[in-house]
Image 1 (cartoon, each protein chain N blue to C red):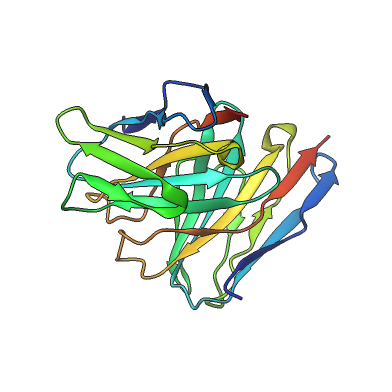
Image 2 (image 1 turned 45 degrees about the vertical axis):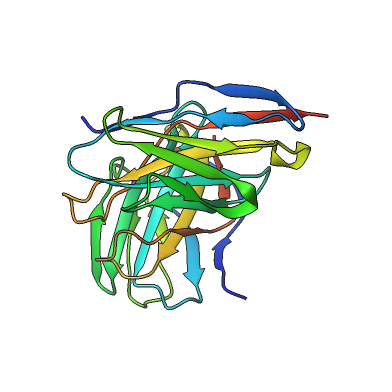
Amino acid sequence: EAQVTQNPRYLITVTGKKLTVTCSQNMNHEYMSWYRQDPGLGLRQIYYSMNVEVTDKGDVPEGYKVSRKEKRNFPLILESPSPNQTSLYFCASRHSASGGNYEQYFGPGTRLTVT
Amino acid sequence: AQSVAQPEDQVNVAEGNPLTVKCTYSVSGNPYLFWYVQYPNRGLQFLLKYITGDNLVKGSYGFEAEFNKSQTSFHLKKPSALVSDSALYFCAVRPVNTGGFKTIFGAGTRLFVKA
């Protein structure tokens, strides 16, 4: 089954404790992206990756890091989480980074709470 | 600044009646346009897209959308609503002049279909 998986689905942590949210896709997609969803704000793009070892900032990259060492994986790293990073996070992928007309496939989401 | 507006936080409609969920955008050039739906505790699912051609596009689950270039709008429609259509709907715009790598989402519109 074609899918995007994220782990963990739920996470409660404390300020400053480094964490990683994993994302994996089995569709051989070149392009992957991370979003955060907040009430009243919709989804905002954090980082995206056009291919292995190629990443760039989205609209809200502060406080986040990413890496793309393999085509199927695109982990999101919070080096020192803060309460304002409490949110619902989605990973997404699509065919062909340069083919912007393709739709994205989304993971099930990770609900993060930072206390 | 580029933006996507979904002017209604919530739309209420009776089952069997037509529904419209509105979306307008402020993006330079001729962007790609998308609609996604989010059911509770799920990731976003693709509904339909406009790339070029006919202004009326058809998508999944009987939904369609009408593109209006002069009004920079992309309203989602369905002739006859079902209770199972109740969900959160997002309009998304992908500017082509930035390489198609970024996607801007609206804040979302919650659709309630009453039996």
